[in-house]
Image 1 (cartoon, rainbow, N blue to C red):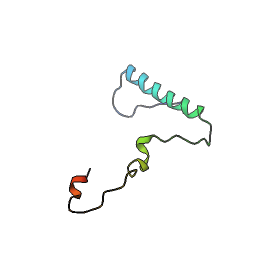
Image 2: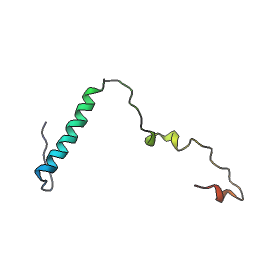
Image 3: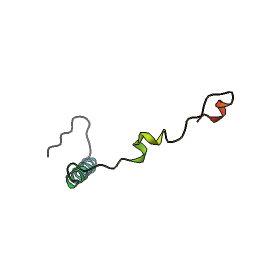
Image 4: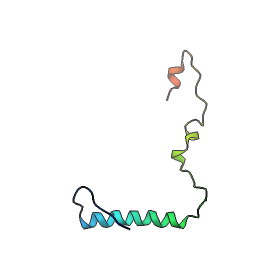
Length: 66
């Protein structure tokens, strides 16, 4: 694995932290079986936004906006 710093002048501690993150991500990617279903995070699930009915427009609809 080759890592090249393109911009800036990172300290050895910053390089070590970045390398630790890259290695951890690579290890988890290798540990997951290929073709396995990935678990979606609840925050990225689009159905979370549309889980409730949208209020119908009307004279008092401004009180029900979010």
